[in-house]
Image (cartoon, rainbow, N blue to C red; front, side):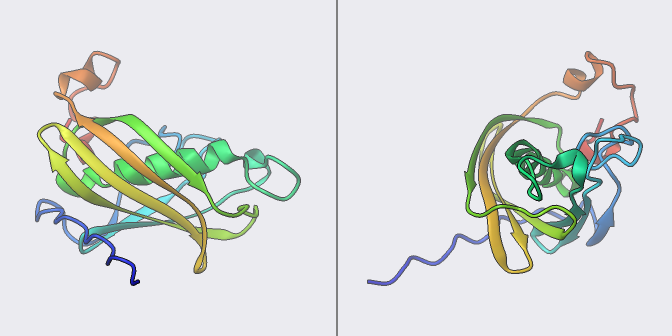
Length: 167
């Protein structure tokens, strides 16, 4: 019996070029350079994939020497949301189903990838995975829901503050 081939990522369109892109906003927990708790994940688009790198430190530790599972879930959520940047689409996390495979050691560069799996109306289905070199650490299947830009404005964003998702 052979395993079925992995589903191919859906196209991310041509609104945003390949290569690095800026953080969602400076204070973002996952990628913001102005947030002292942020692991400062840096993302880039490579075709229909979004790839990021980050290093966790003592602020992110759970058991001695390893990352807390919550920060790994946050990184998977951040990578899932990063798929919205090339799409320039305002959306929010509705569900995040995380599977942990191995401990993530602190002070090591980790890689995170994400891609759009499917879209049905306002629902976006996204898969993300964290690896340490080629070794799997954790993965997630996320459901994001497209929202009107006013959603972010009602909570304090100002027009033009979130251009990465069209706000």
